[in-house]
Image: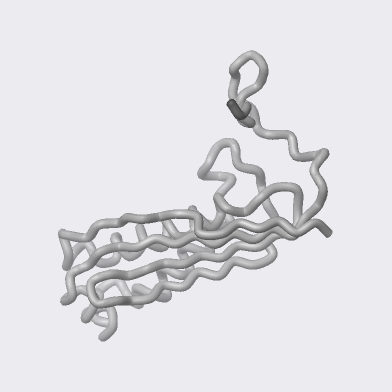
Length: 150
């Protein structure tokens, strides 16, 4: 069985020591979705949600969240992100968020991508909750993670 990296030999929680790792170019992509009523999608498209531009706010919220991941997830490292891209696309009864994160460092950026997607979707929920009580967030997952040594 693989050893848990966030537990020391005495079973106490510990941040992983990445000081001995090679510097690598890191990339991660995550995605997630939120089910909405067709009428809610129409309101978003027409800019009729009272709180503002849902897509723009959700994308910015996702970017901000990625940059603050270490403050939200206790054992995550502070990472200098070199790029964060968050896009929200509307479908017939669904909005899909995709986040891509990049960094050059000793540890991966998948948590940042997952947090970005999660907060983007939560932002949509918050902005639309007055008009849609049936929303459902789901399928948040890591799609891709790469590491290329420098």
